[in-house]
Image (cartoon, rainbow, N blue to C red; front, side, top):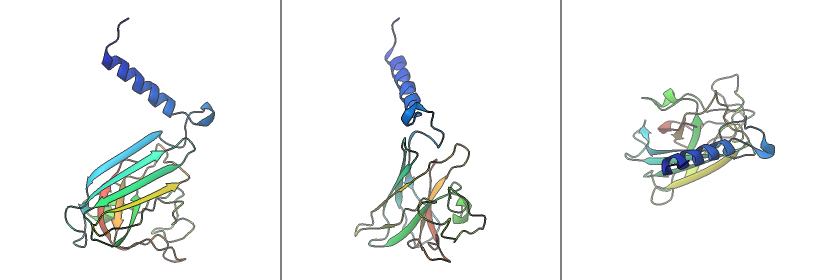
Amino acid sequence: MHRTARQITTAACLAISASAALVAGGAPATAGPAGHVRAEGPLIRYSEALPEGVRARVKAVYDGAGRTHVQLQVWGMAPNTEYGAHAHTNACGATGSAAGPHFQNVVDPVTPSTDPRYANPTNEIWLDLTTNAAGHGVATTRVPWQFSPTRRAKSVIIHVEHTHTGPNDAGVAGARLGCLTVQF
């Protein structure tokens, strides 16, 4: 049987997808998706404190050990400035509150969540960064879990300050400046 290049490419992609869905030991992955996610574009701007034209890129990689690695890059922010950033439960909307609360792997029964048992960089995706003189910044994090197929973060919000870690203000990072929708 003679196969076209397109048929061969499709078969190869299916084989890669199938093998990526296996974790060590050959068991099907149940913790979340195999592979990676990428989103890039201009931030939806919620505040004049965020310069116009800011762009961001978010990459999430899901490994076979059940971890999630996330990187945030921003361009066009204020120079030499600290920002907080987190994955949020909803996609970006007309207002910052439309993105909902921070995504938590184990959900705090109290909202808003400021309890450090829930609002912490292991249970949430925190991407705090400091921009350089050109307004470019990069943050990376790794959490020991993956999203379930039925419950996933849908955006990354940039906040006005680095994330607090105190006993009564854990997870607080101030006003929501901008948002990028990410299909984690």
